[in-house]
Length: 221
Image (cartoon, rainbow, N blue to C red; front, side, top):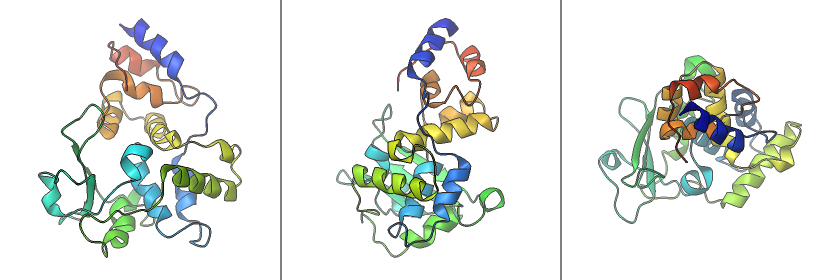
């Protein structure tokens, strides 16, 4: 029940690790291109907005097309494309707990975060010149981590050199909890099962006990 879930949360909390925040993401995206390689700002927006596991999902993302909405060819890792309704769409061929893959959609957020942070308006023009199946970013997960640390260092963020890629997904989940999102909304956004999402929420930043009380069953991510 809730007691079991509480014990799991205590053992898996983020603690003192550096998590990204909405403010930090906006600051990274606004950094001049000379500080980071072309496409890094767009990569940050995609990983953040889709709550991606960077190593297994974001690093190898490919350009997609509307045809990917139904399925992907066996050789394809993923597909990221602009929908006719102006949304940014992502198909993942496989995902943890979802062997048949996922289809995710993000609408315009200009009113909330501005066009420089809006998923469709920031990322759409960047991927437009690519062909279906092209890998969008060429970095390894280690290079992605180092680019993140470099950006955070430029922003004089304490602990920047200790940042890990879990700071994307965990940071987004924590920000959603802080803004009042329900457990169901967080689970749906990150495609978690049961209270596995709680392991990604920093209990020092937000009271997650309410989530444990709502859902008494535990699960592992």
